[in-house]
Length: 207
Image (cartoon, rainbow, N blue to C red; front, side):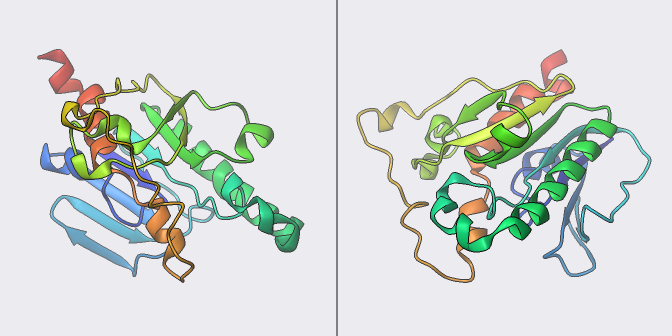
């Protein structure tokens, strides 16, 4: 069965699944053609035009671009105008449609922003520091929204006890302006990815 991840440039979210023996498919416009790294296949495509293969899916993820809809960019929204919003929302809609089509547990991630207004309230929130038991380097803040369905299980928060009393940093908010800033801000926390795998991997749950 396939693990699918849309608008996924890094493959961090699917890495635990690939390590467990699942074939994974990461689709993003920034990939160049089709390439293979272990069990992860990276496909350069626009989800608004890409058709997913007909197969059985174990779980599916999406990380729709948030530049035009995240609250962190509120001060720029008036300058961007209506065209920016019109560009952003169809990508979210197509991600959602593909996720639901897979008939598998699914999760769509986005920062706090306009989706709560134009779609519905998120099912869950988390910060990267909630899962430092799996990756101590994720001790930073970034309130992130999750819309889920298909039986997706939200993992319980598991912070690293050794970091108790240590304030998480705000590296994401302090990232300097650059062409890579959006990519830096969008990288999936490794600890969260591992926690999601452990909470949703069927063979592990059945053991």
